[in-house]
Image (tube, rainbow, N blue to C red; front, side, top):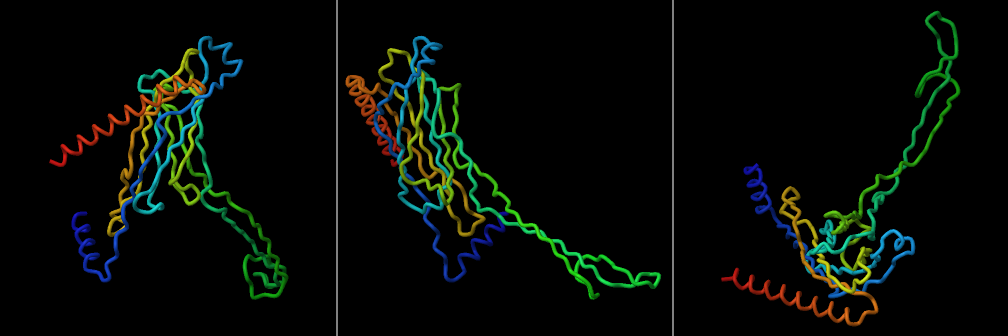
Length: 269
């Protein structure tokens, strides 16, 4: 394998003209500091879950391709979890989705039989039924059946819960009709105590792409973007909870940025 790799590198390096390698993709993420949550508790839930309510949170995750090409992005992975496991996921959107990423295929089958005049082994004339073309004289009949085959389904979005319902994941795969760059909305419904006013979740965003080699044999998948966010949640309409949530999220973001700066400065020495 090492000899083959060395040979391919030599072959490409000595070829003229030399093809310029495509730049590997890089992705940046962003999400709000705080999200207002709406009470969506139905009457039947209150009867069976005394002391609890259902809160809905809708949050947006933005992804920006800062280098490379969209076609080299393969998938996005979003994970939302409650670090203190104080929230229990009751529902979420989008759900797992399968789509046909190819067009339908048309298939046609035909049969052909020819009735012709021939001579049998006894020397008598009789009608012979023969498949396919024949040099004899007679009548030709052809039947044809045409139908469409459905294209195979592929998973373009997968989602579900983790850690006994305290975490949630979304995996979005790329295809020509499902581009990854831009803003996507995710929704979750969680169970909280009746006196709930605010809390926070951790949102991890990852992007995977392909780093092109000198030949396709050397192509490799890698993580081309990653970011962790602390996002505060608060009861919609509660101004005091909103201020507390936003201040908390900003302080935590500042701490993360400071730690990253110190780590970068230490590694550069």
